[in-house]
Image (cartoon, rainbow, N blue to C red; front, side, top):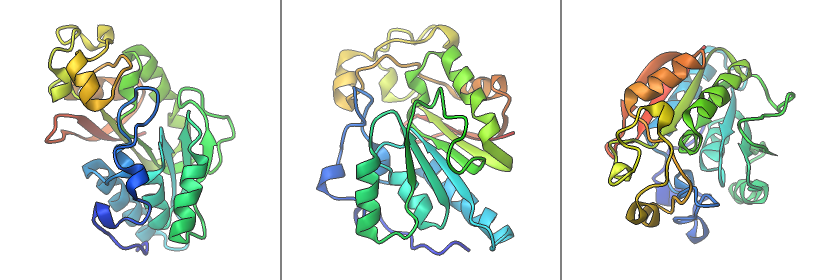
Length: 240
């Protein structure tokens, strides 16, 4: 098994007052991954464990898209994975600082890029896992389908995509002006009180579970699991 110790969020060594409720940037919410691992993050780590157990001589590889300050990228690296972390904002120094403080010998490799147009020769590709949390809803549905479809070639056979989107039935949906529209036409700012509460200023496409299923199928992925968090966000594990 991959050697790493599970810990509570406040004990994770890369967390400090500088990462508490830090904004993800440009009105794109809070960098939750820098605070805690959620249920989809935990599923990802369990999959890496299983992947490594099947072939202990080979380190599994992972791609963290819209990685922010690298909370999940660092967890996966601590689990023993070879990790590439991608974000449109330059969080390379944040990730390197956190990795150095933890004494990581093989920290994540940071690549500054938009996940809609990933480099042809992306470091570490193809990957055993791809993670994209709390980001795909910032694209109109059609753009989201195209982005996710472009990730197919970066995933190894038998690998998994771990994808989440903000939910239409979460509190973010309160007063959301496009709540009654089909997902393909759903793209608008949150109600002002929700935008203020969650620091989400950009327009979003909020999802129901079947919307995420449809997106993944349109992007040529199969579905292993789709579920909603207690908060109401929609999460999926997919494969090609």
